[in-house]
Length: 355
Image 1 (cartoon, rainbow, N blue to C red):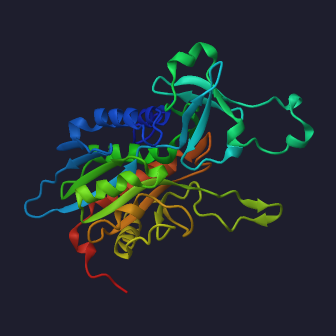
Image 2 (cartoon, rainbow, N blue to C red; image 1 turned 120 degrees about the horizontal axis):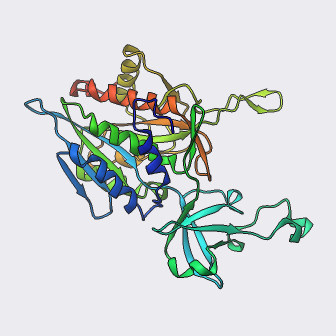
Image 3 (tube, rainbow, N blue to C red; image 1 turned 135 degrees about the vertical axis):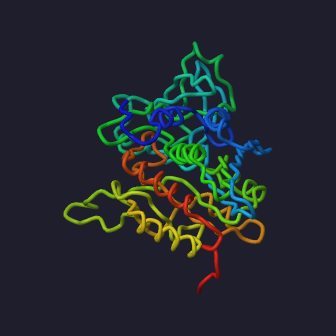
């Protein structure tokens, strides 16, 4: 895999290939701890499973406390009941369309036991059913009779999509939010000296931002930046002959700065600060168009007496599906953008809130 970048591409590959469905993020957490241990001043795992990391600044006197968060969990499945011959009923964990499921390969449990989401072959399916998707209750995860003793009810399963580089892009699973996790690891290794960087690798974002609630309360920062991915619904033609005017971000346009989503109105002081940094440093960035979706910022900004928050995402196609696609240049641009923002950050950017 090409390594002609200013970041560790092998780290993205490792993180993407790990299994870490909501509530079962331990493999991801262990890998992150291994990466950041030499660079952190303080590491703790809270009772919910969040990994909280402090990198103290070196300037004397009060320093700004900046929380940067990225969630470790991914969407996936949970085995709920055992049938015969290595087949298991299952439930979705997080937002996944049932249209994506039939015939897909999966990895089950901590050992990543190979399996497949089974369905009736088309030549054995009644004609009236061939054009409709199969409901979840009729699907099974099949690991084969010989592997049934290696998995059990309660195990999580993920799409079996090893990361690959295709030209200027990466394709793989769990980019939401292993890309944010990888960026946050890189930021810890390059932590700025004028602030206290409080990194939160959160759990259970995909099922209600649960980890971010308690992480923000514990850290009690002056402000927060949330790192995530956001859909790049950017096909040039929306339907035949009609230009797509409904995109929220575009690939190749850099980091996506949020002004608002369904859970948060980004703090305007932070948005203006990021705009100024992007322009002064000539960085590649875009504004995510307001609309649906939300990030950990929706939980963080409502903790204690209120925490000024903003989200910055890597534009990514096909999120919450068996395979996603991201441009390497957008990942690099997001890393560069957040690094520059932290390097120049000071408490005066949180002056009086305008109207």
